[in-house]
Length: 249
Ligand code: PGA
Image (cartoon, rainbow, N blue to C red):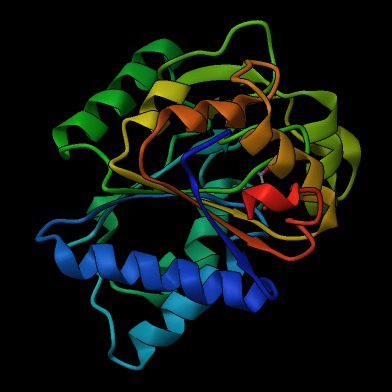
């Protein structure tokens, strides 16, 4: 059982609004806020909500520094399916985070290992992550920390699992176009964030959410490692919460 704060919300919109509220609070309370950001379908509504608030003059991102969790290995930042492009189009092009304060792992570094170490060093130099946003994979991955015998603590190159390639194929023209490798922050990077919000929307995440909260800690369901953190908020809609046993509500 877990200490995580579980928020069961009516629908995707409520999840997005609550997540945006929590981000706004961190942005307002810190002089130089550091956000850990995620890609995928799940946080899109949250980014939309933050853009709306920015355009309404309710939030200022000029002091914010950001670190994205992951990027496909082999896709340059200008590749249309790169997470760099996803973040620019879904969020950064519409708000006032200065470009030099945005960090997204480079998908084509010349020396992967040195680059991963550099990425960790940038996070450290920024003072660590104040608030990390996470989605969850159908297989329980966080970032691209896939189920495996071992998990890596720091930023690293990882081979994607078949189910992840399958799940992400919807963004690509052909399944063969989905990259097989990614660069991702490690489990320790994630757990070092001062606060973590995990968002899950929809029935197909229900089993992973229930496992994350109810199973023992296992590398076979990487999100279970969040049980080691004292300040995790799980924001789920009713469908994603549908496999939680009633005592954990
Ligand atoms: P999704 O991805 O938001 O597109 O479902 C979540 C994840 O794989 O972490």
